[in-house]
Amino acid sequence: MTQFRQILAPTDFSDRSRRTVAFAAEEAERCSGVLHLLHIVSSGMIGHLLDAAVTIPSREDLISDAHRTLLKFPEGVAEAGDPDKRGIKVVREVRQGPPDVQILDYARSHQIDLIVLATHARRGMQRLLLGSVAEAILRHSPCPLLIVPPPGNH
Image 1 (cartoon, rainbow, N blue to C red):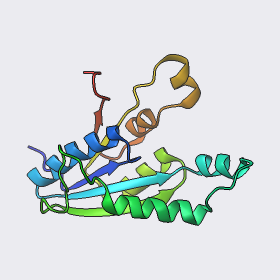
Image 2: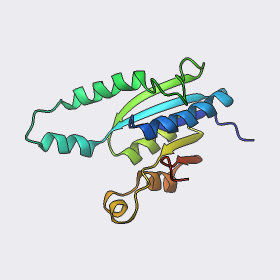
Image 3: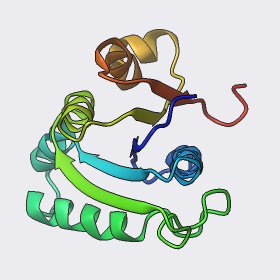
């Protein structure tokens, strides 16, 4: 059986991401592996916010806030528990840019063995207009990919 030693769980801090981290933490614990938590601050999101006519945090503040949130994540997750307290080595990183590009770059540069990814399960026109990060990663991933569907989709 394959041992996944380096496991990447990209997160947007949503409940869906918490489920994904729970899967990844279980696998990391089973294999005595390293859990990599990666949060992407999307360049498109920053650009959209910068164009808004309201006062918004600076790019640096957005990234700093993401770092602080990631340090506590996945606090309060019953299924995952706290990976740090389970004895799992956890690496946390925040990057900026297109999510699919950043996830794939991280996976390659850190020799990730498994990517555990949440999906929005968008369909039809919504998926066509928004694209699919999961699909892009599936097509170009340097390692196996586990996609966790939203609750109620299985």
